[in-house]
Length: 138
Image (cartoon, rainbow, N blue to C red; front, side):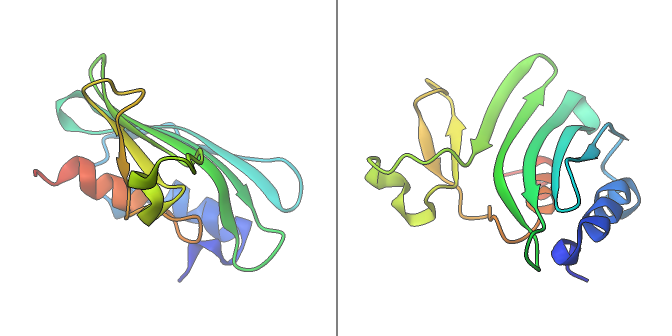
């Protein structure tokens, strides 16, 4: 099943994440509808060893399948920001062209050190990819 077939399907997908991924210890994710076809997803997923995924997505279901309009994902361990992903375009950075506008911010100089993020998309849920990144050692 494609969770982007409808807003109701995406809500069901989000609210079943703890049943689907045993590594999730706690979820505060909430889908807030902003009309019949627009929604915002926000909250956190908590994992072992103080790892957290902070999630913000703006979604549209005006066409089928739905899609993510923009996003921001932060990975924390306790009080340290490890990295973040966002969809803010940086068209003048040729190093990001391969996955434009999807990219990851990493240390050092986390605000300005950006690398391509080939696992992210506007057309499918990104959370499974991010859970795998968090729970699979390098």
